[in-house]
Amino acid sequence: MTSQREGRGPSENTAGGASPAARSLMLLVRAYRRFLSPLLGQQCRFYPSCSAYGLEALEVHGALRGSWLTVRRIGRCQPFNRGGYDPVPPAKGTASSTTAGRAESGLAPAEPKELPGA
Picture (cartoon, rainbow, N blue to C red):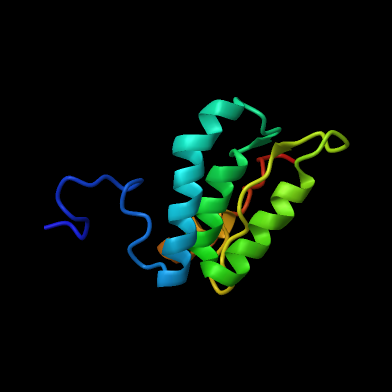
């Protein structure tokens, strides 16, 4: 058996571990995405979009820090900022994506072999 509920994919089962405050804020962001965002059009200069960033920040960091990160991100979304790729920072105490594979396998990176005759 899998740990996910039946009929829900990984992207739909995002608020399972979030606090009630974070879930209520996520509901507001989803309402914005559903009703207001289509009227405004594509405005965000970042990837992921500011609303997607807000949902992920609330899920990963909770209501207080997630809200702070979202407000900072929206403040950077202005004409004097070039935008670009801006992911949500990982939660404190978790391994970064560059070291996660090595930490799980327990193997050290391979050392370069010397070439014969060098």
